Structure formats: structure tokens, C-alpha cells
Amino acid sequence: MVGTAAVGAFAVAGAANAATRDPAADRAPKPTVVLEHGAFADGSSWDGVAAELRRDGYPVVAAANPLRGPASDAAALRSLLDHIKGPVVLVGHSYGGSVISEAAVGQSRVRALVYVAAFLPAPGESALQLTDRFPGSTLSGTLDPVPYALPDGSTGTDLYIRQDRFRAQFAADVPADRAALAAAAQRPVAQAALTEQATAAAWETVPSWAVVTTEDLNIPAAAQRFMAQRAHAHTTEVAASHSVAVSHPGLVAGVIEKAARATR
Image (cartoon, rainbow, N blue to C red; front, side):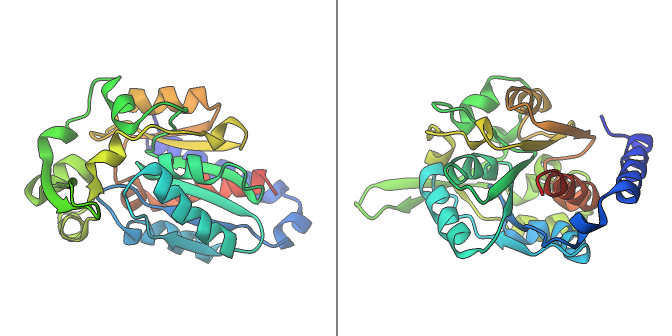
């Protein structure tokens, strides 16, 4: 778990790395960082992380995740990746981890994957299966299902977190006013997206990093550790809520930059 001392050590280590880094490598073009948000969030959830990365000279794109299902969402993300020139570091939060795991398959320009309080499913696994495998998630009791019409005339279900439960469930370490705005602006996920099984796992071949959130009520920390260890991901743990990109943007950006430097 990353406490105050550990976070300080993380910063000191970063400074030491900077002192010994190859100056020529620092002058090389930096990869574009593509940030994929997850369920119950939108691109603004990455604002603090994006600001840190841009300050350090990284091109950043916060993608819009349709939240309809891993396969179709991965196809949408691949279209964006095809439009970006040069190497990419692909980052996913929460359900966004399922999406980047599929989207990066066969994408040689994706040099690293970073999973932030995220799913790293293996083929045949779904987000719901992985959550239910370990105790600790209280998400189901906070959800507000909303039916919507599908093109074929059938009905699907969108899932929101109830606004009066959002902060406690999703963003307990985020200031109350900011959490309230995030609750109002949350993007719903299709219920079917959480049961759709993965068909591929880019982490099997692409170097991976993971931020594990030990106070997470959406994806239990035990589930995050299991997936990160299985993927042989370089792992950082922090006592944070599921909304770690908002509450600890510097730490998340630091892990992303470490991944970017390691693959240059």
C-alpha cells in the first residue's frame, strides 16, 4: 500500500531516475498518451492526470468511451489509435481496462498498457465475473437501472450510480463538491457490457503497469491484484477510492510516465 512515506519514496525514485536518464532519450519524441475512461465517468475524470502529462511534454488524448460493450468500444478506440501518429501509451480506468485490452491487440504502435483501478480480463472473462470472484464490491446496491430502446426493437439497460450514493461508492477521497459534479455528469454503462466476455488480452504480449486502489468499493483490491499479477504488470498500490485519477493525479501520471520511459 502506498502511504505518505511510500509516495515520497516514489517521488525521490523519480528524481533519481531523472538524474541518471539518458539526455538523448529525453529529447526523443514522447509517445502520445491515450486515456480511456470507464463506467460512471467521462473524459473529464482524467483532467488532473492530463494536466500533469502535458506539463511534462506528453501529447494527450482523453478518448470518449461509448460504454456499450468491450468489442464495439475497442473498435471505436482502434479507430482513434489509427488516427494518431507515432507510438502510444494506452491507459484504461475501470471498465476501460477491458477496452484497452482488446483495442491494443495487433497494434504495434501501442508500446505500453497502464491499468488504473481497472479490469485486465483474460479471454472468456467478463468484468462482472472478475468482480464477483472476490469479496468487497458494494456497487450493485448503489445502481440505478434505466431501460433504453435498441435498434432491433428490444430493450437494453443502462446503469448509473445513484447520485446520493456516488461519492461514498465511487469517489470517497474526492472533495464533496467535485464528486457531486462527477455524479451529475456520469456516463452510464450498458448492463450487457459488464457481462460480455473478452475475446483477446493485449497484456499477454504488451508490457503492462497497474495502479491498485486498496480502498476501492467497485473493483475489490484482491481482484485488481490477481489480474495485475497474472499479467506480470509493474504494480503500484495506493490507499485510494475507485476515482484515483481524480484524487491522486500526480501518482497516476507518474506511473504512466514510468511506462512511457521504459518503452522508449
